[in-house]
Image (cartoon, rainbow, N blue to C red; front, side, top):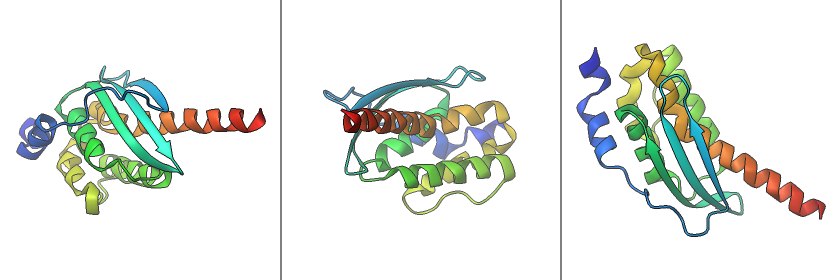
Amino acid sequence: MIDDIYNKEVLRLAADISRTEPLEAPDVTVDAASPLCGSSITVDLSVTDGKITNYAHRLKACALGQASASVMAVVAIGLDRAEIERVRDQVEAMLKQGDAPPDGIWAPLKALAPAKDAAARHGAILLPFRAVLEAWDQIDQAGKADAAE
């Protein structure tokens, strides 16, 4: 089972992680952690007109969390909040119910499907999505505060 979970594609994705240098002037920086497994991530996010325009992360996670974050780093630029939420929901369903993995630009996440039976690792896999959405929440809150002034 462990060989299935930490398969060759997961290890390749984890080793090929990009966007690890902090952004110089992000709209927001968010720290998030998965209390069950101890994985943590710091995400820098810039958003313009409802789309991600810049993304960076620093993380301490198992290969599964690193693989998930690696995919996020490759595809995040140009995406909107609805797309991040949609794929987060697909990944969660893949892990919890064995549903089909995401496709298109997110297809590499199918390498994480064998982690279905490793519930303790689900938090690490979903952590990049949670952090990006938390960052977006802060941006939205700042926008509401700016609009009130």
